[in-house]
Length: 140
Image 1 (tube, rainbow, N blue to C red):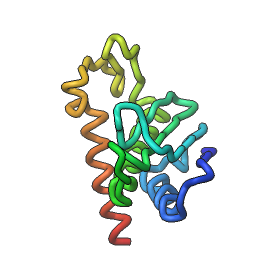
Image 2: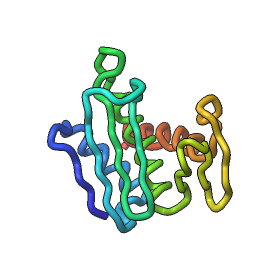
Image 3: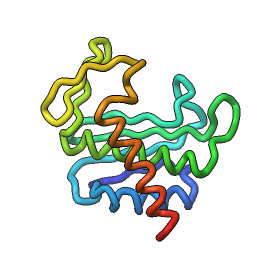
Image 4: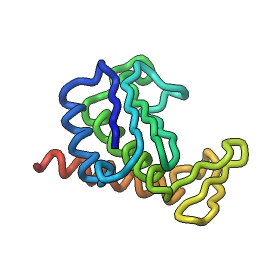
């Protein structure tokens, strides 16, 4: 795995990224992973991730609605988005056409809408791992 990080990434996030990548097993995969820390993201999101089996890209916001994002929220967001990166890189999640609101999860086509996105299996898993990884980090 080749990991590319934005130059403005603080040391605490660099250490956490290493920890989370190992926790998830991303370090044993092939491909490229790009992680960028941005001022703000579209729709005031905490984080975004997209990818496929060869490459995943993550963006993390440092500000939301004009306010700084807390360290805890940045770290949990990193874990959440790294879980999505793992899902893409392993082929468990294959994004569909955004207009169709369909994705493939472990070989099954899953319809979703913005209102039900948090109920999709990939989001449920990402929410679970954001908590697990953060707790493991805090108790290491």
